[in-house]
Length: 358
Image 1 (spheres, rainbow, N blue to C red):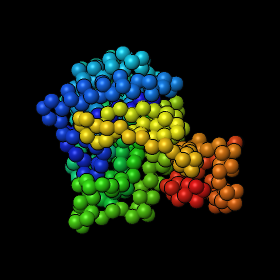
Image 2: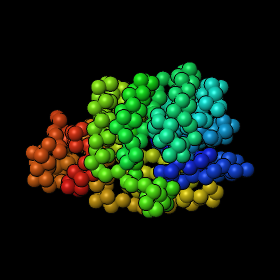
Image 3: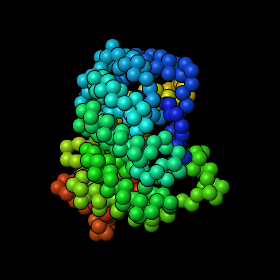
Image 4: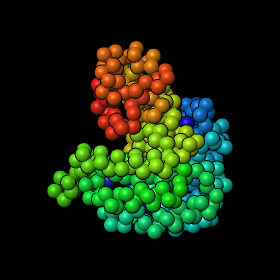
């Protein structure tokens, strides 16, 4: 599993706290040069047992094709080239509309076989409030182009948990997203972190954070509509048509080793975590070992985010039996075969359930 962080955005969304830069002269070259060197330097860490490649960001779709090609050639030179079981590229709808069908066809020829489109909303007022570069019509056109280019595995992202998101707009957004017929839909609850624009609005009294009751209400609407449309709710924030569950992200939840490359990217070896500093050039790599307790909590947290749940033997060996039985009695935990899982109607409060077990 390989993750590559592309730290460029043409503008910044109000809610975003990921490391990114607005690209200027020479930035693409500097980034690509250091990234290719890092690929060579860290080739021995890469494991091909789950052969996935994921370009995230930032906005990977702003990266010129010539630079993407150089990165892929560096991976090939180190013995970690394609074809990949899953090769995901995150993209902004406006980039796809601007660059058009030839760009998408080039991505396919380079081996990309899964597109993850940051739609976030299909309401123009909310998109402007988020400072997104695209419009609702732009998202529709981008999706049409992706299909025209021949992509058969497409994911779209949506955001809920906004105090200014009405039921009518949220329901219309979900309905239209479903009507596009993507193979995968990821829906994330808005969180306010760091010192982004939304955090400043909150501090200045220009925005009121959505209460838990409203977030739960919006989540329930989402779960109901996705189930009715036949999507599998296989992870707290993710829904897929059967057989289209994300392989790469699934590896994260199973604690499979992965290598993160590029500024601010994180890696996991199984017993340690490491990360690159958030700076475009000269970024440094730092690591830390995980304690036995860290590993236990991580295993619980990640596995119980999924519909597959956690192995019963592990759960009972690492958690108090009385806690497990109490949660079962409360309906917050169910036993399915040899595994235990949090049922969908308790997914929204999974953090509290996991804290009770950890």
